[in-house]
Structures are given as structure tokens and as C-alpha cells.
Image (tube, rainbow, N blue to C red; front, side):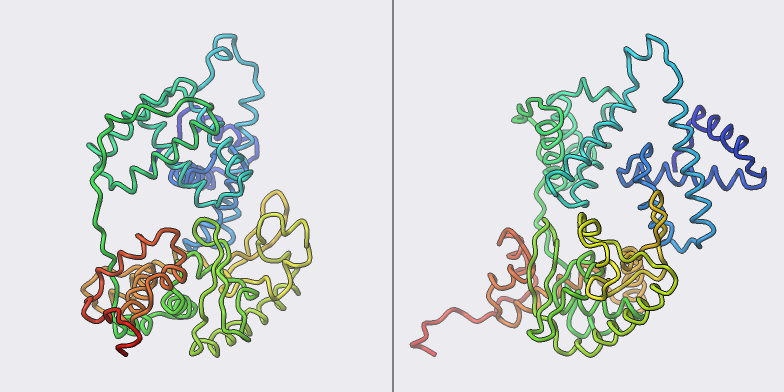
Length: 423
């Protein structure tokens, strides 16, 4: 974990004294600031922007920190942001004004990236990925000003990724797409001349999947609500973030269809809802209904809504159809708005629970939440489903991605194509 820069620490301690924070509390405030700065670095959030407070507190909540510690952490971050504003308000010398701090310029680039991603209505995951690569590029350039960054610098960066970091080809391509976006859309500079760049080796990755018996065994080791989340990941081929992000209005029990909204690439798709899960899902909806009534009695402001929806339909956040199927156990305080809202069950808790269950099941293969999705595709292929149908159910944009699963099964189990005359 990175340490707090000396000048930042000094200003922060001055702020603690000004706010009359007791001496025995100061180490805790410094700890939260250190955690916050480390969180922003790892998650490509802006440490100088108040919008980073909410995801930071969600992370603390997922780690099991209680409300008192979350409030203390929020106070520490707000004080830190105040000291930043005070430092920016102080007059600067002509030398420093003509030679701005590169770190500040990189922060401004990240903020511009965030705004551009929002304008184009790309997903938050796209922003986090691109911002992460931009931070790695910044580190590679040793904080050289982004104003001076060139396509030649990018070429050296891509070569470094392939030859030194030994990244996979897909990872190098991801870095290329991120910097291409920044050069073209933010910096308006040429992005070419990569013919001599070392290319990372293409990996013939074959997904790991579980047998049906192994799926049932791992699920039997899981507790509520992760056991139902796992059943939906396997039964519907969902990604982890798609499963925890299900809202009640996404399910149609008349046709037994689940609509996956804003999947990877912001694409929607429909998948069959497992009939055997419907009673369990309806019990979960009754739990959500009871929780909603309890929340509304305590001054609840509603769930977090899709962008723009909370402004257009203010009351919808308290309506049952918009509630998460898997709500977070605690409410989240939205700083700046003084609102108490509920987020969905956190993805990291699902991952931790699945890995622990697989360990208890003593499986010899590596199992993650995504393994349920791999198992869904492999088992459909074993059942002689058409590869195009599996592609649609998985939400793959490219058939080649789905074709990986043909390597997970014994092709002798797949029927050879025949003329209907020969049936």
C-alpha cells in the first residue's frame, strides 16, 4: 500500500487540528486516507473528486466495515478534499503556473475520460478498464506530462507489456484500445506507427467447467443468497455482475423469460428462466418485499437507479419492480445528497463464497463464479444445442468466443449433421 505524500500528510494533519479531532482518533483518520488513496490508485478513481467517495464506501461495506467506521472514513476523505481545495486556492508563483504539475494533468485527463465515456453512454466497466490502462501508461512514462505523450511512447509501452510484463495478447489488445480511445477522442493526436511493436503471444485458452455433479456439490456448500445467485449463473449462463444486478422487473413468470439488461457491451438479451428455480425466486421476491416495506418505514430513498431514471421517475426507486433481486444487507449513505439508498449484493462476496465452497468440496480444478457460466455453455453443447443458439444465450458478439467451448467436450457426443431423409 502506498504511503501518503509528505506535503499531503502535513496539510491533512493541519486540517485535523483545525477540526479539533482528538489525538487518539488521528491515526484512524490517516489510515482511512491511506486506504482511500490506495483504492483510487487500484480502481482508477479520481482521488481529487468527491464522486470517488461513494464507490470507496461501497468497498468498505463489502469488506464488512460497520457504519461507524464508514462514517469515520467518509469524514477523513471529505477533510482531505477540503485541504486539496485550500491548496489550490493559494496563489502560485509564475514558475509553477507556467509549468503545471504532470500529476494534476493526468488527473484532468482521467476526469475528461470519465466525462467522455458518460457522454457516449459506455459502461462503467469500460471507464474503469480504460482509466486503469491510462494510469499504467502514466506510470510507464514516469509521470511525464500527458501533453508530451506520443504514439512512440505508446509503442514502447506495448512492447514493454509483451516482452517484460509477459501479458496475454487479449490484454495487450485491451491496452491498445484504451490508448487509441484516449489519443483519438481526448488528445486529438495521431496514433499510428506500431508495425515494429512486439506482439504478445496468443493464448489458446480452453475454459474450465464443472460436471453437473460438481455444480450441485459446490452449490450445496453455499449459503443464501449466494446459492441462488450461483444457480442463476449456471441455469441462465450469467456473468457475475449480471446475476447480482437482476431487478425484479427483469423476470417474466408468464413466459419464464429473464431479460438481462446492460450486459457486457451494454447489450440486452433474453434467456430462459429455469422452471425449477421459480418457487425459490418467488420466495426471494417475498423477502425483498418485506425488506422494502421495512426500508420505507425508516425513511428509505430507494434503490440506486439506472442513470437518468432517478431524475425522470423519482418515485420508481421505491417501487417493487425496480428493487434488486439480491439487495445489499446494508443501506448506503449517498454523500452530498444526504440520501440512504440500497445497492445490490456485492460481487466480491459472491467470489469469496464460491471459492470457499469449492475448497470445502475438495475439487481438484480451479473454480470461480465464472466457472458456472462456462459449465452452462459446455453442458448445452453436450446436449447437442446449436452453437448459434448458445452464442445468443451467452451474449457473445463474436461466434469465435463461443467456439472455445467446443474444446471442453468430447466431440463424439455431438451428433453428426444428417439429411432429414436419413432420420
